[in-house]
Every structure is written in structure tokens, then in C-alpha cells.
Image 1 (cartoon, rainbow, N blue to C red):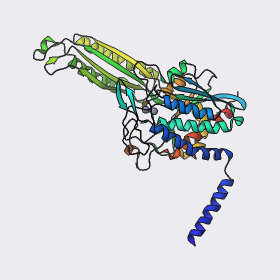
Image 2: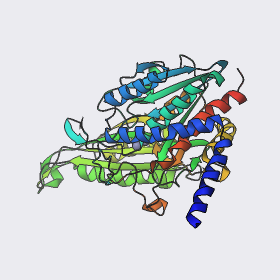
Image 3: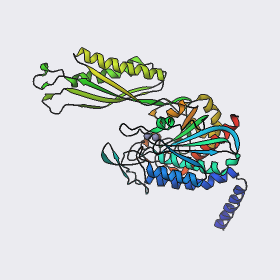
Image 4: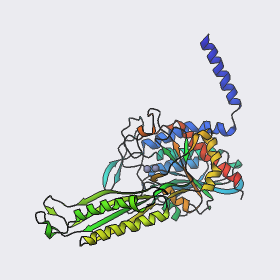
Amino acid sequence: MKIVLAIALLICGTASAQKSISPLESLFNEVTPKVVEWRRYFHEYPELGNREFNTSNKVEETLQRLGISTKKIAKTGIVAVLKGGKPGPVVALRADMDGLPVEERNGLSFASKAKGEYNGATVPVMHACGHDSHIAMLLGAAEVLSKIKNEISGTVVFLFQPAEEGPPGDEEGGAALMIKEGAMDNPKVDAVFGIHINSKYDLGKIYYKPGATMASSDWFTIKVKGKQSHGAYPWNSIDPIVVSAEIVQALQTIVSRNIDITQAPVVVSVGRIQSGVRANIIPEEAMMEGTIRTLDGQVQKTVHEKIKLIAQKIAEANGTTAEVMIDTKTLVTYSDPVLVAQSLSSLQKAAGGSDNVQLTNWVTGAEDFSYFGTKAPSFFFFLGARDPKYPSFSTAPDHHTPGFMINDTRLDVGVKAFVHLVLDYAKTTKK
Ligand SMILES: [Zn+2]
Ligand SMILES: [Zn+2]
């Protein structure tokens, strides 16, 4: 009896819910299972940066089936343009598509078994940063927007970007190459939005920060010239290992003694040191590599100058020289405060209320989405996807690790965010 009553209630409840559903909501409901399916497909078959051949073809086929015109760009990238039925601004939405040389060990039924080539070696490949979900959410938004295109004021540009994690070797790639090849110019983009999934943030919630959001990333190399000698007669040498040790120590004072860290965080890390071949030989040279993260362009410049000064002067004090090379990988990812303010209500609609859209701290990770921000006002935000089996932020596996995993049951929030941002931007920005 109780069971019959429960079923009757369930049927009535479903019927009344269906009556109140808007056409947009039913489009979201229709696309959500496809988004999960796409995400799992891309997860199982990841490809490394600038090698996203299958991914790119699959994305292009899907967009063309929706009647959206596509163009290959920046090697394996795609720019797709959907013209709305009414005049209005041009909004770009971006998803990155590359996987990483990481071996997947998380027990998922659709875990990757893919291999790729990296630095001349065969390596396992995994979507260990969640870019699979970015592709799927943007395809979901493309499907919904294509079905309501007559209602759209303006144009939507879909940017499917290769090699966000950095192109291999000396190759060009990523957002910078897409921009160089005109991705933001034809049509000229008025605002650009991007989402990053996060394995640690609360499932289904959106996190954002106006202004500097993610750090710039520079890589540096320091080569210390030494003078080789027998390890038993060090007075005949200039020991590049000892000089390097002094440099590593002194580099720590850039952050701790030179930069006003109350303004924004700064990181200077040495990640690699290489020198010597044998215990009883003082080598001729030492080399170290590291990364710099800053959240302000001026601070970035100061850190560069300090690294050069410290390395060169310590080398000089030891009677030798040090060569410093700094390579800028990404800029500061900046979310335009005006665009953020006008976009918050769209995100709240997507996430189901203001409690589900939260301010977050600076992130010292970096994003090459930052390059798109040099061409138009930009807003980059995060979607939480921590699997409920991990009770807290700190217990969930990190991005770029073998255990990395996201829960894909709330990817609809990302799809809705993209769609609402497009529709609402046109309302607030008349053209
Ligand atoms: Zn990423
Ligand atoms: Zn990453």
C-alpha cells in the first residue's frame, strides 16, 4: 500500500515538474547525458599537446553535425562560429583539449590506456587535468546554443584549444598560436570566457576571483661555469656545485626579503639541478631549472631582474660566470572586474543560487587562457568536481597525478554557465 502511494506521488510529482520546465531547461536535460558520454570518451582516448588529432576530428564532426561552421587552427585547434538570428556582440567560449604524460591509476572503468610520445620516449597519456570535461561542456553548450540560434543576439565563437599544458619541445602551440592565427579577430571577439574543472572544490559549485586569478608562469635556466679538477684537490677548481648551492639559497630571499607579499603571492622554485658524472671529479658546469609564479606584471619584472642579479653576482664573487635564461610560458590570468560583476547572475543561475558561486583565493597555477585576455575582456572561473568519496579539499587527489579524478555528475553547471553567459552578455552589452 505504502509502495503504491509512493509511486503515485512520484508520478504526480514528475508530471507537475515537467509542466513547469522551460524550453531551455529541457534542452539542458537533453544534452547532459551526452556531455557525460563525450567526457568519458575523451577521457578514455587522451592525446598530448599539439597531437590532439582524433580529439580534434571528433570535436569538428560533432560541431558540423550541429550545423556550426568550423575551421582548423593552430595545428589541432578548432575555431567554430555560430551566428545568432539577431545582431549583437561576439562572445568567445574556450575549452582546452590536451592530456598529460601521466599514467592513470584511479580504477575508473573508462581509464586511459593510451600511449604517446614525449621528449622522444613512449609515455602513458592521461587527461590528468580534466580537459576532457572542458571539451564535453563546451560541446554541450554548442549543442544547446545551436538549437536556439534564432534567439541569440550576436555571434558565439567556440575556441577548442590544443596544448594548454605547453607544446612539446620548441614547437609553437596553445592559445598564443591560436591568437597569432587570428582566432580572436574574425569575427572580432568582445568578451571571452573559460572554465577549469577542479578535483578538490565542492561538487557543482563555481569559484571565481575578480582581477588577477591565476599566476604567470616563467621557466628559468641558470648555467654556472666552473673549472674542473680532481675531487681530491678542490683548490684547483671553481666548483660549480658549491656556487649553485649558494645561488639556490639566495634565490629564496627574493620572495622572503624583496617582494611585498601582502600585495600578491610570489613563488620561485628550483625544480632541477644537474651537474657532474662521478664522485671524485669536480665538474666543469652546473645547470639548474626552475619556475616563477607571480600575480602582477611589475612583480614579475622585479623577480626576473633579481634572479639575474643574484646568479651573476654570486658567480662573480666565486670568480666565475652564470648565464640566466628566462622563458615566459603564460601571463597572469586576469578576470576583468566589470565583466565579472555583470556575469555573476549568469553563474548563479547555472549553479542554482548565490550560495553555489563563491569567491576564491589566488591560484599560483598558471593558464595559457591568459593570452586570450590580452585580446578582449576575459573571465576565467572554476567548477568544483570533487567526488563525494573524498570528504574534503585536502583529501582529493591533485591535478596532474595518477589518482586524479573528477565527478562528472554536475557538468551541466558548466554547460549552463556557458549558455547563460552568452545570452546575458548580449542583454547587457547592446551593439
Ligand atoms: Zn588544466
Ligand atoms: Zn593542468
